[in-house]
Image (cartoon, rainbow, N blue to C red):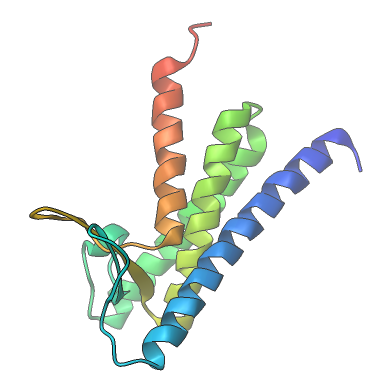
Length: 160
């Protein structure tokens, strides 16, 4: 394998590992809630696992009941993910490439849910005092981290 091919193989493997981590976490949660009477699992004072079926976009925004719009949204997300992967393959900057592939890995987990379940499985529920965050999943964590890395890398990049 050539050097460039090896590097890209590493990044593609990274996407597969993110996808696998997301699938495993969602499968464990789905199996647990399917076989129990619980509606939520309290982990500690600020973290709960609560199963939510999200048919909107990030963090449940723009939830759609009509299949046509949901399918259009899914196709748009799939198209954007493919563009992100191609952007990632073209960039030579390690941090940008890593962040693009984090986004692509997370997006692929959520796209799988959209295609298989017609909804995204969310379950990580964070609360602090009276603040309650949106319920999210492992894929969302990687998408968010990838976007934050891109944003911070733009702020701190050297002027050439």
